[in-house]
Length: 436
Image (cartoon, rainbow, N blue to C red; front, top):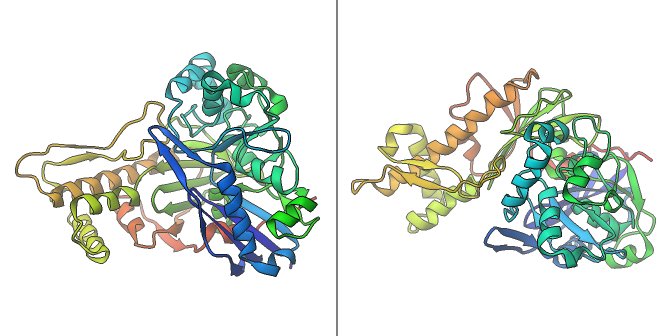
């Protein structure tokens, strides 16, 4: 069995690991990088991220030089434009960015909502579908793009620096808003023309398990790797987790953390404007995804603002006590659960309390937040069932270290079994078999 070096690049940190199949033999320290928030803009400095990747590889020592291949799983979308040498011309713009709301409406008006959905599997959500970001730069900061030679997502950027290749996989391509996602038949010239994007700047699309390039001499020196080591195209982090869960048709995979992601594996995608639909990255399969943008992050915001004297353990007990009592604990108070916006809306909603009176207290406010998240979590099930794919009764669950997943699935309709999958992104990379 070959040895793989896995690279997991999330929204705030990088970790590298040595894998033998699905077994993690060693991991680097987690290397954090800064995400910059400025109003609706959410960006990562590309140079900082490369330095984090370098430190993660370095943290594995000599073991990083003895692997048979390298694979990566990355946050998505994470859009960036590069010059001929791979130097970033823009920051890495993440999926949380919301500067392009007006642009998104214009894209959809020109193409048509139904047509855009039928081609790409998604509406042009600002930041979440990166054609909106590209179009924003063309309109507002065109000078940055004058010397652009390659435009893509994070695995495109990393490959440019590791192997010199110009590649992206189908899972990342799906969230560009320029890919024929439903047919998996390459870039769509009409979608490119719609935002004024040259197809010549786009990377080649290769399956996630294909050997897309090999470590160059310069990259070997910088990143503490062995020259000539094959590097797979890589894929979206959520796809790696689904692969570990088995990626059977009908499999549900739930990642519960700061955000909560519920993905259904299918071979017959049926796009829904309230869901994200994208390629898995391998095997001609797809994921239909319902995302709650702020879950743990919203609840722990409530702790800081309303329960600052409470220990973390006592706050968690409080959440479970209120969740067990149900809606009655909230009294007249309700909450809109959009503290980080909404992944499947163009016009962004915000979190808000309603029904407050002078008799309302902080426990009722926390209960209202919990009840709104429980309801939003359950509302995804009918949407996924409407796809026509028969859903398997056992759900693979990752994350949820503080068991928030148990609260969120309290009101799921139907009967379910749950199995835990740990270290899902890293171990999921170990399921990939390199293909030349």
